[in-house]
Length: 194
Image 1: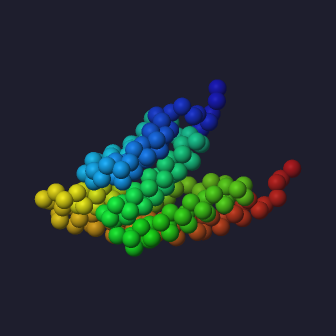
Image 2: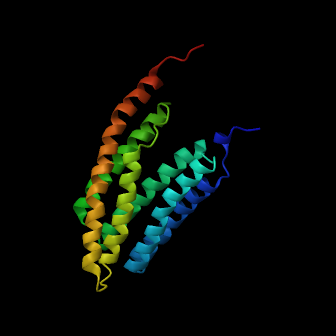
Image 3: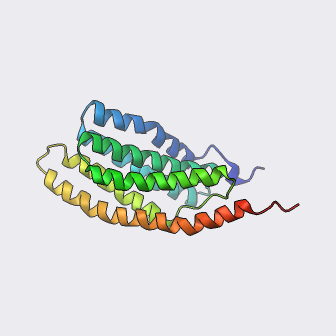
């Protein structure tokens, strides 16, 4: 029987694939239809699946090697699309797009480079997951605040209350990845034991 980590067809992996497939739908609703509230709702639902798939993977023994790669990739794609589309739509400030974009590019680039060098995969840290969750609350709230609804002022305040801690946690996680990346790089450089 195959090791459970080698499984591909799992509920968490299916949720990550659905999250990836729905990213273009979110972008079309926001940029093509200019439906800020609907786009914010889609984004919130997609962000929620990130925590659902993690919970299911851990509590129902569905952690897989593919899932450990697919989940963070889906997170990065969703966050990058949300912040860029949100900025293009005018709902998210340009400076916030730059701060989030630089962090996402640095982490994604480091992961890709380490993978190309044959380094072991770096596990996601709690601060990174919490930062992503906070930002995934903030971005839909920014979109809702931009919708012109009568309660837009409240949603914008709530967006900043999630955004600032989310940024702090995301950058804290990025800093925590530096020593882990150095260790992974060192392991990749070790000669193979015969």
